[in-house]
Length: 461
Image (cartoon, rainbow, N blue to C red; front, side, top):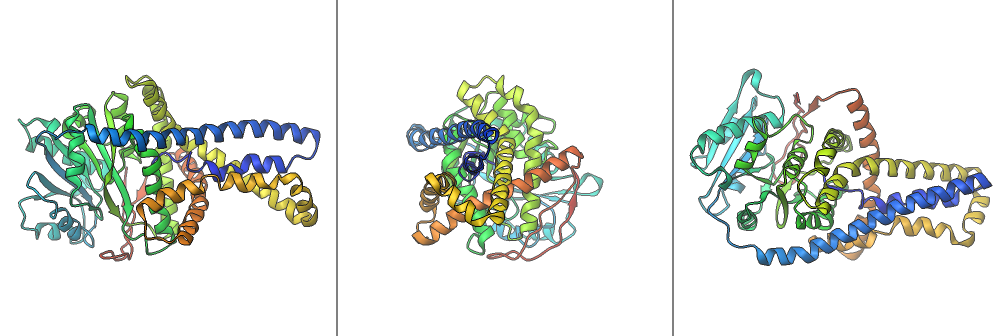
């Protein structure tokens, strides 16, 4: 889950705007003043930080790319954890085998599937394709445990080799990597301080519906506006799809590099950063995945992400004491804490909007005559739409074929879509308080190309 508080700051700015609109008595006016100052400070800080990240990402990134030199000889291993992924795994392997060169392997981790996943993998005659099967009670313990088992297998397979030159890439079973991805990623590992590289994530079915499009905007905008800047100071966020990590660095987290955290990918990146390692983002390469078209499944997925983010709050003291620069430490702590800040910010925003709606229903004529006076209502519109041009600019860079009208509609929809974190966040808080950690694997659905409907499979943490 990437840092989103700055992206959500503009729609959440309705908090102080609505506060100004709601001041009636002297006491309410005083409260409105306090709320105005506090919320304005948060918005200015958030938007200011966003501007800093944009300048870092679109200025220093070009300089950094010019400084990158040819990388030493590396061996890449694509790890694909699978549980009943027969509908997509075949084409995923086919796509990976289109990557030129012989310096990589594809290891599919069959985590106790009871469909035809294993047979599909075994039907590929390429020596680059490896099938690692987990059966019995050891299987179906979650994605992290499947990856840990593969990590131990790889350490044995590459015994005697410099493990810092073995690069592991985690790919979802429906992931589609750019054929030239290794050419874009490998140069980063010429720097011995770089532990991992995250590439851009896109939705391959973004044209199928509004929800799929919103998820694509979400990843593109956060990558374009935030990840680039974070990469310039070595604190890019690591995701669960398209994440490249040195096998040797994983030894620092052994015997189980992937933890039981619900966002094990995020936690791994934070653990490595806390030890002083650099993490980068590569926008020139991407991996596509299936966007969720069901609101229920999307909400469930984001609830899991938020709960996992809460689990990472315990790392804040360690991150602040890390040997990184002060700006890097601040960024890491901001990335961890922003989910809670955004939840509070947007919850207050929705609460004030509800109050305004109630007042409008009670006295429509009085409401408009009063709040239009002095142009105070303009604050609501301006604050809500402040980042709309930024979102449009960012997404247009990746989707140049979208018309201006459609781009405007997509960007407006995204500002509303960002409020999905309110129900997801509070559901995550409740689950965390109840210490619930079990989750159902996100099922595939009909999409563009090779997905068909399947039943969700329950996994344990």
